[in-house]
Length: 125
Image (cartoon, rainbow, N blue to C red; front, side, top):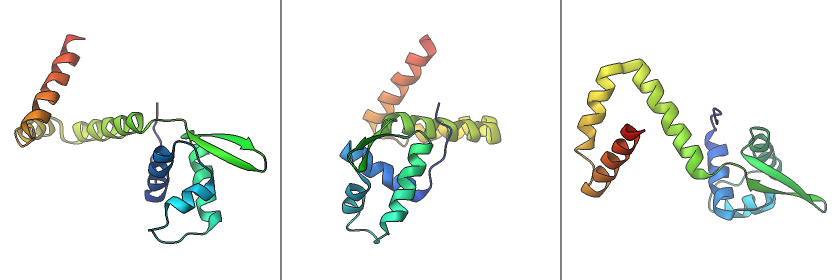
């Protein structure tokens, strides 16, 4: 289970790596061209942290490392949402449930139906 939080730069880097699928540090730097220029060592450190947090797999190819996501974007997103909801429910209890129920009405029809169907599936378990 993922319990690690990601900094903004780690999150941005993971977004790039999820999009590329497999990459080197230099590939991440190239993909950031429209953003603030950061040193190779800065991006290398971020990628190394992501590897240490087990978000990435690392394979040595020649003199360089190639990184591949070990965690899918979907799995990470679900875990972040779950952690948020658990903290929200713990801190606000019934008020949180009422607020959530009210916010469902503001969703577009298709998303509202999908959410209600998902809740029904969990009720069957």
